[in-house]
Every structure is written in structure tokens, then in C-alpha cells.
Image (cartoon, rainbow, N blue to C red; front, top):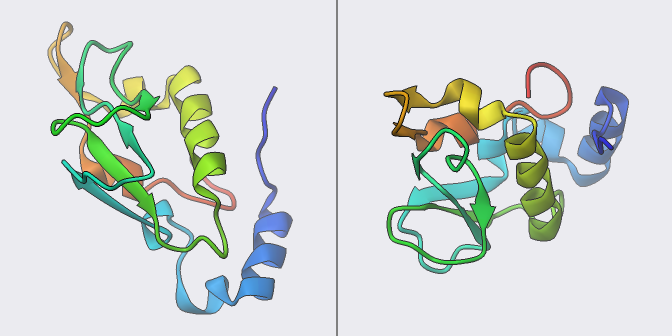
Amino acid sequence: MQHKLSQSEWRRIGKETGWLKEAGNRLGDLIEAKIGLEDADFYIVRRGTPDAVGRPTKDYNPEHIGIRVTRTDVLLPQYLFYLMQHLHGQGHFRRVAKGTTALVGIRVGDITHIQLGGGDR
């Protein structure tokens, strides 16, 4: 079951909140993402097996990428957590991860450059 917002729904939300006027359509415009961010809303596994990398978790680890939603008027942290679970389950992070076959990793930019409201997710 997919829970994608269509481009027109993103535009409507963007117009209502003013987000489209001041921000692009990248996830990085709505969040702070940083390795070791202790007071994050949740975390993304940065390094590990191809199956583990990119998995969202509520457990802090200084090696994980911390995600804090800065534009809660546009995006709820809980919704983003579930969206990241969906992306992980669909293999998004497996496709963008770099490394050997046994140990791979993702970068902060692999998260912040996720396109919203259409295009490649």
C-alpha cells in the first residue's frame, strides 16, 4: 500500500503554507539531517548490510544519521518516519548505497536530496 502525495497535492500544501515560495522540492528543505544528531526526531542507519542501511529507527546511535523536521508546518515527523520506512522497504537506500557487497553506506545527501512532489523518490 503506497501513501504518496500527488504533485497537485504537494502544490496545494505548498501554496497554503508558503513553502513553494521559499523552498524547493527537496526533503533537505524541510529537515535537518546530521550524523550523530542526538535530539533528532528519529535516525537512519548509515552503514551496514544492504538490507539494514537506510532503515529508520527511534534508537540513538552516534553513527546513525539524525533527522529533525524543521518545517513542522509542512511535514509531521511521524509521517516522515513512516515515509522513510516505506522508502527502505521499497529498496530506495539499497539502490543509492555505496560500498562492497557486505558493507555499504549512505550519505546525508542521499536523504536530503530526496525529491518531493513528483520526480524520482
